[in-house]
Length: 140
Image 1 (cartoon, one colour):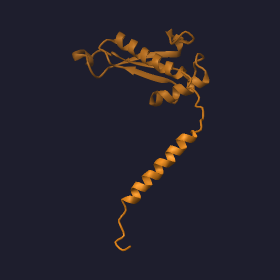
Image 2 (cartoon, one colour):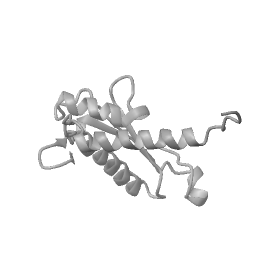
Image 3 (cartoon, helix red, strand yellow):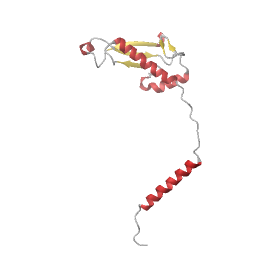
Image 4 (tube, one colour):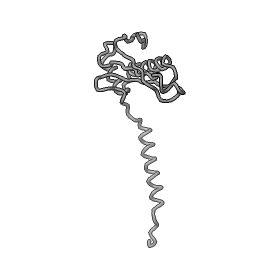
């Protein structure tokens, strides 16, 4: 079981791990031992996430979201399989936590009269500067 926060925790059937050979640190062991972790979370079938959170997770996951509706997180940062497993779970946890945050809705506001006046004054001033830079007509 993977605990995300107080309200959400994922059951063991919702994700699976597979181990592959890693590139990067490991010395001679890198060619012999499968230390990299590929964590696959079945997000589309998960009953613990509401549809809005799943939509946000899909957007946040990007290329890590598969056509079957799973999120694939990999980790090969460490030489140890156990450390990579923990790292991949932490990456998944952070991704789901970001998806669980509801964005605050934008409240449309109108500009103040003072800001409108200042903007128009700045535009008029800028236009006057550009007019002053123009070529002078030699004949009056």
